Image 1 (cartoon, rainbow, N blue to C red):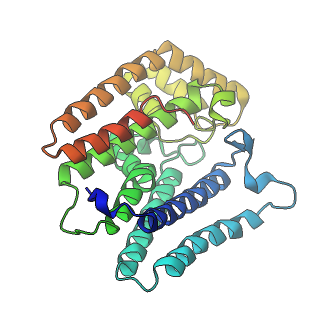
Image 2 (cartoon, rainbow, N blue to C red):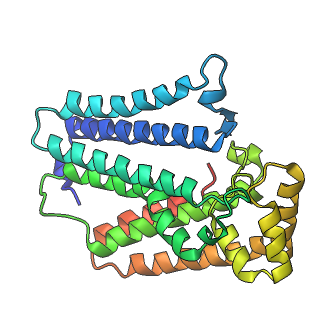
Length: 284
């Protein structure tokens, strides 16, 4: 989208600064998520909130990270015309992330809350758009666009829609990793079953359950009891959820490839194809 003649060292440095902002916001998001989910590990290391001497002080540290992102924007772009746009984009992203985290908590199932009705495909589809797609894809794209000299050049609506759906693919993969991939590979001990999370696996399993299996799900899902977690995993095996997931993931990927190839802009097509290639089968 940008003319290569503008790829000066100064402009590349400005792009890297915005990259730092994205990374800081993501760190903020993951720290909050770890606290809310009572997670123990992240990327093969102890979560910050369980480090000795940290505890609930991690909540304030999350705020520090968020503040640092805005400080960086002011420090490096405060006197530029694009500063207002950068702040607006970042504020909007944080707002949507907070909504996503709220929905993540709201839709979580437990016998005590008796909110079985929350585990629906409609809720899942709405939730995934603001869970991973916003800060992983939409946010960096919007920030990057502010640096383009010719602001009349912008991504098409279809390109943004594809970008959103790559984010949904990433969320599907996160759901899969949490249950089926060894935590040594993911660097994170899965807690989706224990936390009663609204995931593709929960929604799809309920669509395929017999009445007896549904009762087993209601009795065991959202419990930290190891035997209950084991029973849910057995239920997923009975329903062949891993096989179904791999078929569905492949269909989502192939649909994205088709849509990317159909974009009229070669620049958009090449850009999104590279993003999709980097995300597909991505385990971090």
